[in-house]
Amino acid sequence: MINIKVSVIIPVYNSEKFLRKCLDSVVNQTLNDIEIIVVNDGSTDKSLCILNEYAKRYNNIMLINQKNSGQGLARNRAIDIARGEYLAFVDSDDYIEHNMLQILYKEAETGKIDVVICNWNGVDTDGNVLKVYDHPDYDHKIFDRKAIIKEFLTNKNALVEGFSWNKLIRRNLFINYGVRYPNIRYEDIPAMFRILTKVKKCKYINKNLYHYVHHSNSTVHFKQTNSTKDFIRAIEMVKDTLNEEHLESEFEKEYFIYYGTNLLREYYRSQKLMRSSKELKRHFKVLLKKMTLKKCLIYTRGEDFELICRVILYKLGLLRPFLFIYHKLKSSL
Image 1 (cartoon, one colour):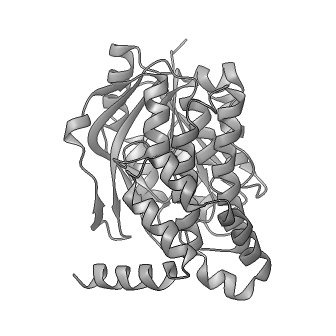
Image 2: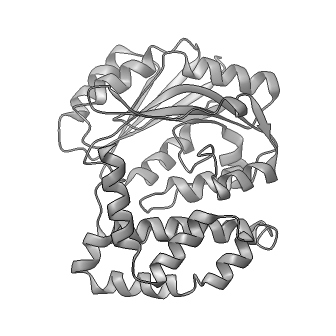
Image 3: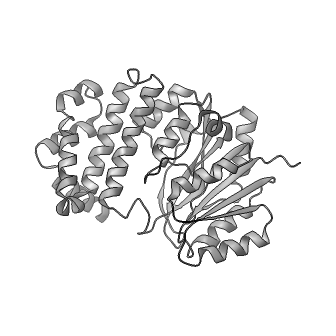
């Protein structure tokens, strides 16, 4: 019986334009003994036809067809049947380097690592690089449980974020602790944070092995009132996990920074929505009322200058125009 090293999970919904490139990057991996679980989540375009074609051609592809239930539930269904020692997740409009799984698996096995995180870049639909991160000082750095939690919450280095797709994760972390994705948008955030609270060792590899494709139809770019509420719920679920792990007091300061930074960022991104949704506007007002300058100074000890400035500007009613001008100037440089 073949020992499956990695199960690659790909949820698919209406990705016909990008799906072949995604699948080609996965089926041509240099690592042997992988299985590819593709979940067609009720696609209405030609995605299923493409998936059937690849499933017939490659015997390590397992195709699941279900009615549209959301990306989180599609991933959960795949996790339930996965056999790999490790799990990797790829979004159906993205693609990976041909040796990504081999590099991450070798790191995981050699060092007995629970989660290996790789670097990534943002590309447009033609493959042109739009965004590159570089963390040479953190290459091959190993984090223990508390260090990785702190890195996630403070995110000062844009190093450990709530994405599933740039990580190789020991499957037993999902199985032994019952970790599954919630049925909301931005489901990665609470699920990945729960995973990170269960690790003994986590390692970062500073290689751009994952290519995240930017386009207008993604969850991140297509804003709706419900998606904004889901984002807020997702970052609140991070605190729920801290409470469950009895870590709320130890990471109280870090969570305040995490929550405040993300809430204010989402507030700015949701300006157009709030013009047509008084309910959403009231929701933000209630949440941001708790973000007092006094708390901000206490929790950050005056060190997080960016968050302090954002809170002051919000209280003065100047955050939106300031950030609008800032982004306009930034894009013109």
